[in-house]
Length: 290
Image (cartoon, rainbow, N blue to C red; front, side, top):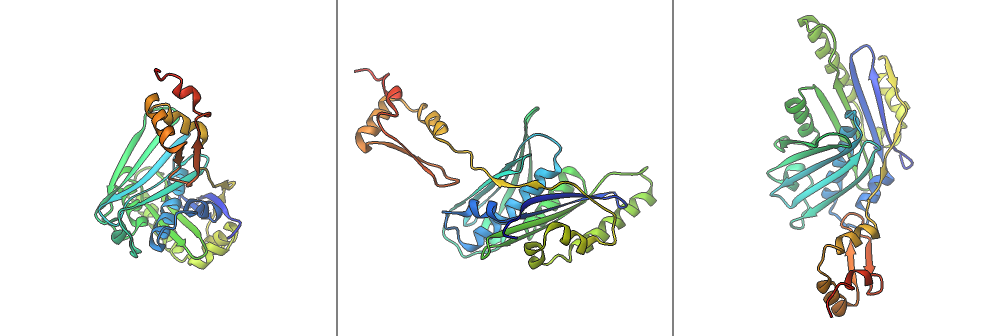
């Protein structure tokens, strides 16, 4: 899967359900690069990255989504942000060093906060307790509680190969609402979940999407859409750093330059450091009264 950074969407035309498959390599590597996260933290961040990709693909809008995990465990904060173009970035903040490797032991007692910001319209949030065993189960619970849509999610993360992947099956509303129709929908959904549950980590990390989907669903009617590229985009820049410096009092800028010879800002996502000397900040300190 070394060349994979794709999200595939597909419809089960006879079962009134939809599916998604995301397979990531370099985009995941870019997120964890330079951070030296413990293995368990990298694994969970890979799962959260895939989960965010899958969530973004369920939304029919232009805009951004952020999925945050917050708790009282060794990892106090973990977040992945993305948009409808599948441009992603993510970070974890450690409260203490840890060798933990499960959601509960890493985050502790906490919540998952999903913030959706459409380009047009108002932002809205969904909050769910992290009281399930896995992140995938917590997300399924989120859909059940907030969206009331039967949804099943599978997440995979391999820190040795630095690969991450995930799959989603979701029931679509259909039919006349009769008991018979609802029973068929649930039966179809359960059947597709059973098929998807046979995914092995070595398959999702090595097989191309078409081959994997054929292996899983060759007896189903599946309509596969054009894949969407997933990429890592941090979003930091020198201009954004200068905008932040502009909020500092000119006298304080001058004092920092006198003390350090420069002002440095390091992006917490990609660990790129931007240095600004007195010449580059001349317009900011020209307002200082002499």
